Image (cartoon, rainbow, N blue to C red; front, side):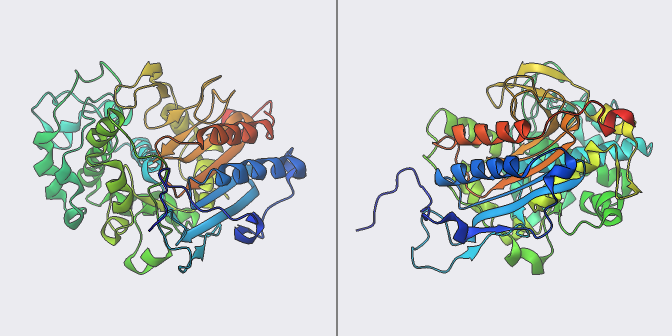
Length: 425
């Protein structure tokens, strides 16, 4: 008889050092106004979170003033899930292990859109129908690119056909699904998080504008000039075995939360978690949800934005483009999809003074969360860029207090600076 595990907890060993790996390239934190003791306190927070048993793997990278001061992983990339056999084969997660980052992908897609706007190929106030005439009808005619980026387009619900894994790179699939994107409110009138839909719309706008898919544009405009290994939509087929697995963990979601999530995601939450491990999704293009990356490259991407659009001497965009991208479009406005208030810009989730996604006193931070406890953000006032990945996908559970304390600790250990780079540029 199998042992019941109602919380779907990961089996956590007593000795965490045996399942911890760290990069050889962590810089001396004293050089950038932090401390070795402070870095240790941050990592203690990661260990505390891991002991909650909600994630088989956690990876975290912290950059300060462009220097990597923490780059570590704990747990297993494969074989460490709640239902995996105790004596089965396990593969350690390392800082080099890539994972699907889910909705953190939206920050990447938003950056592509802002780069194209800087190049003069579009304006955020352009209507989607200017690029996709088939988008007209069903209350969608006046929807702008800006409204899609800021979750004000009123099209939050995902038609199941949009996630047909056999056709993820087929543009006709998007055109066929458009009539099912019914507006739930007048465009611009409210905030309702577009879990997946907005990304597909923006991806098609990019294709119509450039004649290339958004994966190619991202690579040509940003990733290749900066030498990124990952950080694109999906991976090459030969790289699929390198990607860490996602696992359903924690108490199963119950109504009405389960129903709300299923409507937003287009499927039940556990089904989406397992779907994310499917090679078809890992090699396809889902602009709102399948960027594959390491925590290190997530933090490096955010450091590009934190530093004003130039990284390692390579200029990708102008500082004014990042300032425009991070201007607030909703001030703690109630999100009709997520069910709580949040600050958005045109494509980014913004921090806040008190109740913030990135810890307290982070009102100038910006980035994006990913399903369920993935995050990447930049905090210009602290000259900080963070990439954080968890492979477990609980909705609620005993981990939330430890997660909050970890993000708070990161901010506490990186004091604010008087004159951050982004605002000098």
